[in-house]
Length: 347
Image (cartoon, rainbow, N blue to C red):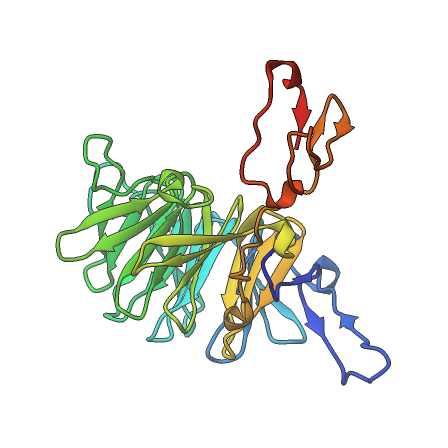
């Protein structure tokens, strides 16, 4: 059995006062529509550089200052309003620009003017966004913005020209993106871009050749539906999926898997994941979320030997003896010779 340090937490926001030696008192704060949240189903959370909390819901974008909400919704009479009310991704880039992934395209928020610039899919323009449902947004070390969609694959976005380069699955090309539903994007310490998909496993992108190399269940991945990707200090990638957590070693291309027997909230996760400034990992699932420090997750390398403790023929225990098939205890016996009349036995 694996030694583990997974902690299961089943509520979203936790504030804990000083812990006494006798009892740990926890106070959970529940923020909902009664406090001004536009809708109760929250898909995305982001804290910007100014300290504001942003919440993406099924019905609107919310800015929270700790006291009250400012809600942004689509207004059909306002071309500068949010393009769609369903929010799947929120991301602030290195320039301080806030990007919103919606069910109706990518939105760039102009804080000064309080307006949204829209980037949407145009069937007649191959340099437009590949699909209007934006599920992931990520800026790499070169300041390139990557946009993942649900059905249109991966996009590389040129913010100056407003043009997109599409990377999509091609059945005729084994080095294309493995699946067009992109759920997570992450750049590791070496500069390698990793793309998690919902149904096509994990993809490693070679930016020089523009080829993708997929890792799927047949390659040792626990499940082909990847929700989150985080990197620890040792360079291992931690992947949340529909079959637990996987720890991936990019150097050896090997996986180590963890499931409910190791303390996970469930084998099924979702798109909520986060690495704190202190290195703590958070992965959300259908039964709360797990919080852990990856360096504290220790595997038990000891493999116990298999020992046979009993031997019976026709439900009768066989003891060592001169006329017995056993000349010594079964636990130390290397081989046994039986007659055809002794064909019904148990170990």
